[in-house]
Image 1 (tube, one colour):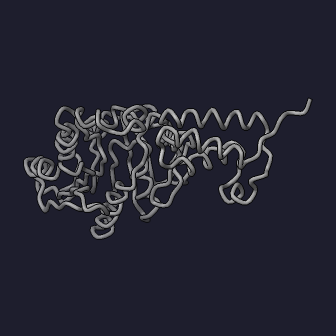
Image 2 (image 1 turned 90 degrees about the vertical axis):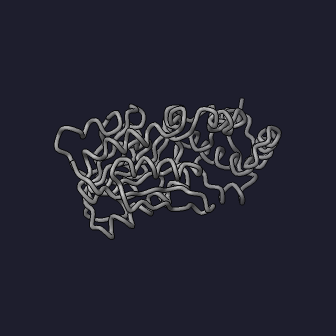
Image 3 (image 1 turned 90 degrees about the horizontal axis):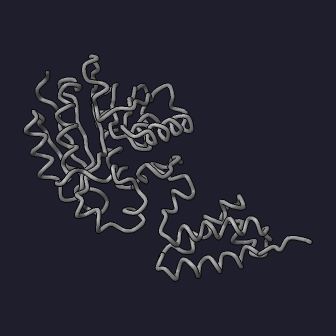
Length: 291
């Protein structure tokens, strides 16, 4: 007996109804992306081929994905990909989903690298590797060392290094913050980081997509949200060349606190950069003392 086939238009309509019923605003785009993933077609194809027949097996896979999205699993985990700085990065559960806000951090880092002719850069708490890899893709003749304590982050960063062909410029290390570089004479011109910086009381208020699926350890910044800024800043003194830069992504209400941490550890020329929403997003400081 011939297997029953559904049409693209019918499947999308049912998917729209399911996701719309639970208040997912992006229900239309999400369904199109999920069906496209299953049948390996782009959105334009589906727009102009609503009568295209999909096998019952493909339809079943599609509705399984729709059900996961209904339960608020982030669409980017389901697709296994996220665009950042115009590049397609591989992601999976266990690493933070890249945010457009972090592009401000990368752009600020690149500006300083070019201005100061920096060559050796460290990306700590690298997650999926987006910061170090983006810098390596957009600036010539530099060396990046990316590190993270997470096995999944190490695996995902390694995949992205291969995917974006930067293996000659980016090395990956598994490390508790900067520990693996301390004591071996390693020196950097710049250390860049988007560390965990959210307080536990704030994590509870985040959208279900974030708090239920993204890794808690990539969000939790200690009771006051500042734990990793303190540790990384203290460690960086031992690793930065004199005049080297430390540059952080921060939460919108952390400017004053992180500025004080930098000052207390011998950093000067501290500047804060706002994101496109005019919220404080990046802080950078220059090391004025040297171990």
